[in-house]
Length: 283
Image (tube, rainbow, N blue to C red; front, side, top):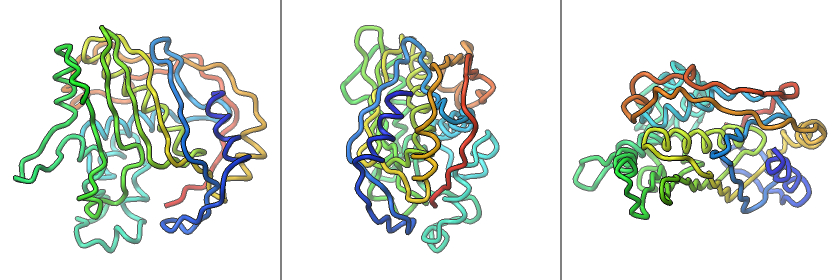
C-alpha cells in the first residue's frame, strides 16, 4: 500500500497537466514509476484505503489468459470493465472491422493466444512460455506481449499493461510487467492485482516457487475529475496491513485455467479496508 500511496502523492505534488485527446479530459501526469509485489511472502497488493473488488480484476486476467475478444465473455466470468470500451468508444463504433455489440477486436489476450504470423498462421505466445517454464527452460525470451502496432486499428483499445516477461532463477519464477499508461485511481487497483496473480498462477502451473513481480509504469496519471477524491479523501486515509491470497491448489495446468477455473478459486484472507470511493471512468 505504501508504494501505491507514494505514487499517488507524487502525481499530486509533481504531476504535469496533459491534455488527453482520446477522452477529452486533462490528466495530472508523471513519467516512470516502479512498483514491486512480494508474491513469495504472499503480501497481496490489494488497495486498503478504499474497498477493492478484487474478483473482477482476477476475472479480467482469466479472460486475457483465455484469449477472449468479447465483452460478453468477460461479463460471463464476472468482469464488466470492457463494456464501455467495446460499446461506447466512438472511434471503435465507427470502425468497419467491428463485428457488432460487445466485440473488442484483436486486443490483449487475442494477441497473447493468437498472434498472427505473416503467413496467416497464429502463434500462441502464452503456451510457448508455459511449455518452456514447465521444462525448466528460460531462454531469456519468455515473453507474452499484447502490443501489436500492426493491428491497433483492429481493436477497441491499445493495451495498457502490454508486456510480461518471466525469468527463472533456479526453481524461483519472477515476473517483469511493463505498462505504457495507467489510470492510477482506477486502473492500478486492477493492474497490481493482475501482476501478482499472474506470477502466482504461472509459478503454480509450471511447478516453481514464486518470487517477486516487478511492475514498470511509463505514464502514470490522475484524471482531472478524479483529483479531488484522490487528494482530499483517499490520500488522507491510513492503510491497513496487506491481506493474503489463497489459490485453489487443484489448478495444475494452462488447460485448467482455460476450462474450469473461476473467481471462486481465489480467496482473500485478512482484508481490511476503508469505504468505497466511486472514481469516474474515462472512456
